Length: 134
Image (cartoon, rainbow, N blue to C red; front, top):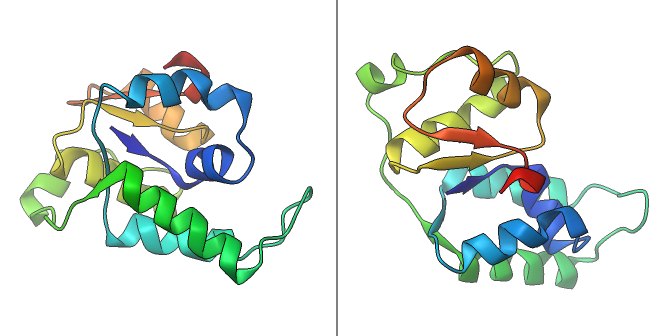
């Protein structure tokens, strides 16, 4: 299972109720992350949020919690395998599709509209669902 950055934020920072089903499902599934996705998470954790801003200790704690939950994947996707994927309208989100394919994940969990649209329009070797649908 791959989680996009917003889903990680909802889980780690806000303990959002919409992630409850996901957190339950994660107990019986493997969540994966790679360097590109972790770097984006680290960058976004430094942003000021409406409800709160995280100090460095809180950001570090969130990243450590992520690392405890997810298995780090170092495999990179070969160029010919990238051709199997549709191009996401938001190029910054392509990394989540690539990670899901490289890790042979069965699920990509996202709230991102551009990624969710791909689930409806293209056959992929993994499902794309919103957190509430997990």
